[in-house]
Structure formats: C-alpha cells, structure tokens
Image 1 (spheres, rainbow, N blue to C red):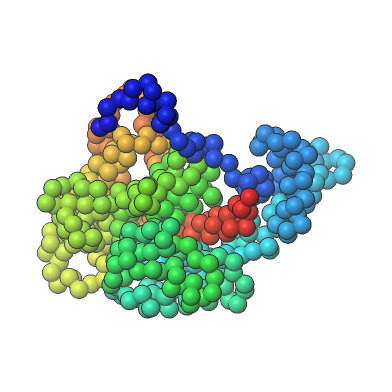
Image 2: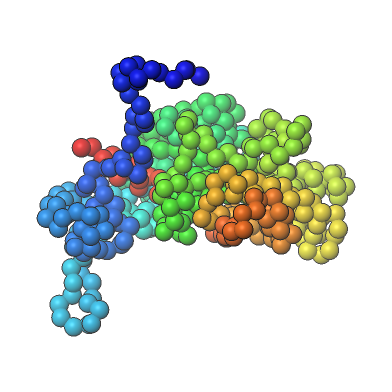
Length: 410
C-alpha cells in the first residue's frame, strides 16, 4: 500500500473517486423520456415531465422528436369522470420494431417475438439436441428456432440466453455444457448467419431481466433471482440495473463452493452448490441411493419424476435426497442474504415443482444461517413460470440493447 502523500504531493494528484456514481450517469434525455413512456404503458406529457423532473417544454420538444422518428404515438385514454373529451397520452409505437428473445435449454429451446412496446406477439419451441454441440451446429439450431418464431418478419435485434459462463460484452461463450469448445464467439457467428444484431447473456441473468421488465421486480431497486434447472444460476438487480460484475461473469452462485473436495460439478471442479441441488445432482444421487443401476441410462427427466413420486409416496431415502439438497439450497440462500441484503429473493425454474427443496425445514435452516439482526429476512417468492419466462427475459435484453443503439448517442 502506498504511504500517505504529503500535502504538496496530494495537491498534485488529487483525491476522491474519479467517476460519478452510477445513479448520476445520465442517458440522453430523449432516451429517458422514451423509456419512461414504455415503462408506464401510456403517460401524458405533463406526467413524464413530473416523473423525470424536466420542464414541460423540454419534454414536448423531445416527444416531437421521438414521434417524427416513429417511436412514440398519441393515444386517447378515458377521463376518470367519464365526461368530456378523452385525454391524450403517449405510448410506444409497437410496430416500429420487433425483437426476438431466445433461451437455449437443456430440455427444449424457446423463443418469443416481441414488439417495441414489449408485447409478446409469437412464440416457438424446439426440442433440444442431446449432448454438447459444435458452434456451427448450435448456430443452425438458433437459425431454425429464429425462423419458426419470426416467420419472415423483419427483426431488429436478437438476444440469446445460454447456460454457463458468458461474456456478454464480447459476445463470447467462455464455457457451456451445450458446447464442446470453450471461448466460442457465438454472437458473431449468429450475426453472420442471420444478418441481425445479436446479444448473448447468461440465462439466469435473463430471468432477472424478465422479472425486472415484466414481473415482481419492476418496482424494486434491488432483488435476486435464483434459478434451479439443469444447473443453478443467479441474477442480481442493483439500483434497477442488472449487475454482471467487473468482467461480466459475476453472480455465479451455482459455482460457489459449499464442500471442500466435494461432489463433482459439470464445470469440472468439486464442491459447487449446483453439484448438490441441480437436476443432474439429484438424478445422480437417486441412481446410487435407490439402487437404480438398471435406470442409469434413463432420461434425466424420467429419473427426477420417479424420485419425486417416490418422495411423495413416503420413501424415506427419496425424501432424504430432497432434504439434503434443500439444506444446501439453504446455505446458498443464506449467503445471498448475508452478502447482498436484497429486498426480495425469487426462486425460479421448472424444479420449483419439487417443493421439498424449499420446504419449511429448509427455510428454517436458512434462517438459522442468516445473520441475526432482529430485522425480518427478505421475503422469498417461488415463481414456476415455465421456459418462456427465460425467452421473455432475452426479449427484454434485445429491447434494451436496441433502444441504446437508437437513442443513446448524444
């Protein structure tokens, strides 16, 4: 650590942060106006001016600019009294652009088509190929799904969610169980194949975006989403923005260590949280603990359903498997609370049907592992919304990046 500078040296080098806090970094005013209108669905000029702390004249000029660009339109809304002429409000012209959001999943891949106002207008599903793929094979799967949902309509942006370690800035998949090779330039390969701008991100981040744009997180400044599927992921929203970390690889909760030299994770390391909670972990333990050697080649979904049925029927071993996984989940949740103190934690994913994972005993253990301050812990909500939720989060990413490209330039 450098010693304290003397007064003369300190005067030359300065002191204090060299950049403003994130909350003070302003996007162009026209972008703020547009995003406020989209967030409210429909809003008057005076309401936008009040919400953003701008003068009515400034908002009027910016609205006129956005209307000329074909991005905003006027709509009539009924007056509360029901009398007089309908009030005039502003709304996003949904037909100005459309985007596609896509999730590449372990059981199936899904996609949605959304207009510029965020309305879902179409959806498509494609069964997933078994096993890892080469980059060119994955690009063809994406192109097939894109064609099914877009059906020839012009698309302004495509966003794709992938499990694994994703560098969203570089458009690169550093590692994923769906790809043979590491460091694949997926965004560039898909852009070359389809001719549209492409964004990619970790799929758990997209669930957090879906909740931020369309769900329980719209009015919250800070919340966490934990996903449990074939892997365990986490998305975290801080100050109304998705937090990705310094290198875009943060919030990998599933790969935090809960046991030294523990169970083997699909990432190649041992003791990761997901090696005790994810689909493959439960299926692996079921085959061993229940002597299901004859089922070793069965599909993972079949093994999980059999395990759950056995637990519901009272099989003590099956219940113990879920109970152990629930205890590890409690460790992960308590760490999230102790580290981030979010206003809300959302548990999301198809495996939320397996209620043993978050039974009262597991939540009680989570409480015992959380720092005791005398204040209530963050509420935990369970959202088993299905695979389209991930694709809708990808559509939110596409809308965000498209909006930036259109309006962020000074």
